[in-house]
Amino acid sequence: MFALRKSIGYVPQEVFLFSDTIRNNIAFSTNHDYSEQEVIQAAKDAGVYDNIMAFPEGFDTVVGERGVTLSGGQKQRISIARAIISKPQILIFDDCLSAVDVETEELILNNEIDHER
Image (cartoon, rainbow, N blue to C red; front, side):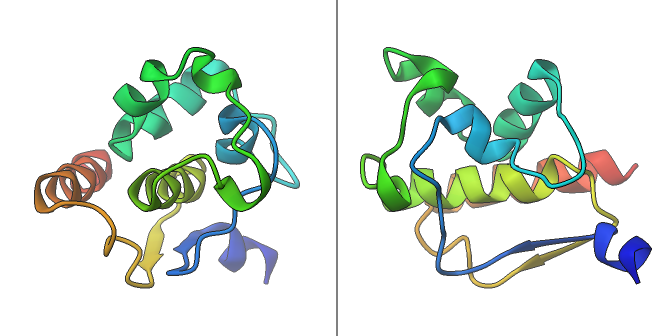
C-alpha cells in the first residue's frame, strides 16, 4: 500500500501551508530529504520560482500561518511544487489551478508532460 501511495501526488483545492519557510513547505515529506536543486526544480516546474526569488529572502521567506503572506495563486503553486517534487507517477489536481492565470496553468501542465518523457 505504501508503494501505491508513494506513486501518487495530490494537490487539494484548499491549500494548507505551514508557518515555515517556502523551502520547507515545498520539501515537506515524512520519508525524504530533498536537495536544494530538487526544491528549485519543483518551484520552476510549478511556475512559482520567479515569485519566490522576488521575495527579499527567497526560499527562506517565512510564509506565516496557512501562507497568509502569499497570494492565492502563489499558495497553490507552492502546494503544486510540494506534490511534484517527489516525481509521482500519478498527479491528482483537485481544481488547484483555479487561482492561477491561464498562461501559468499551461506552463505547469506542460512541465509535467515534459517530465513524463
